[in-house]
Image (cartoon, rainbow, N blue to C red):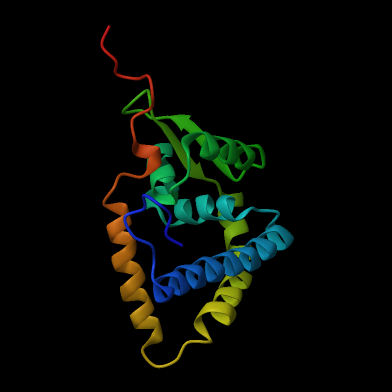
Length: 170
């Protein structure tokens, strides 16, 4: 897979691991998304927003922190949050501490919807991801993916990068 000018390609083993990870991720996300749409009329991203808010202190987070945690663009998150707000699943309000920040809070209806879809979500994750593993597979997978995640998160998420055109002198 190496091209002229590329420092070096990936070995067959590296390519195999990469493609397997991408395929597993896509298959799992498809199955979870299908369930969330059918049982809760939610996209996977909307579920992630609600789930993070349910787990957050007082059920609220700054939009920027939510975007960074989900690794989602500010504009995409704003759009998804707008859809959830229209359904009464979250509220959005200016931060009392920083007028540039928006605080997102899960509502009782949002909590109820997460509680409704969570059992089916867990069932799919367990059936598709957890059950095929044996022995130390889960601990090994958690360790490897945890290291890779931490390595990737060492670079600021795209939502935290400065916006083009801002902070320019004169």
